[in-house]
Length: 159
Figure 1 (tube, one colour):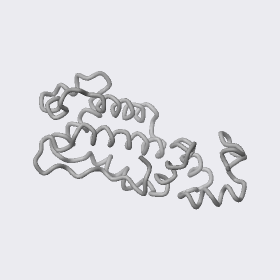
Figure 2 (figure 1 turned 120 degrees about the horizontal axis):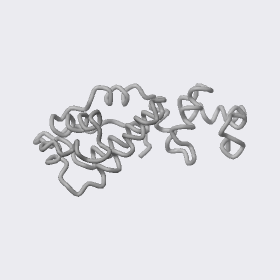
Figure 3 (figure 1 turned 90 degrees about the vertical axis):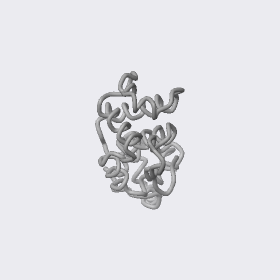
């Protein structure tokens, strides 16, 4: 899922539903990662992770679940997450906080997700403690031997 940048998909013109189950699941997965990168509450992050798995595994039609209100009855879909999904699927509009988080997350942090063994938690630490904003910044920090001494990292991480 790592790439140059992440964007929220554009809505279908002939909705509702404006977004598919897979699009919503992917958006929730990306939101969980972006929330983790931003240092959001771990319970909020986890709710997006769980929501992504749940929506991705649904056999029912997501548009029908939203239209009938049954989405809110699914275990793991709370009021906030259910409202956000309903807004996207039913109205074709992503919640503003989702859009802002996508826009405000530096592209370089998302690119670093493509490095094996470097996940959102490590990227956040590298960003917060060393000011790492890109793969190039990370390479420079490794050359300067700034990564290995950090808690949670080591010589192997720095390679």
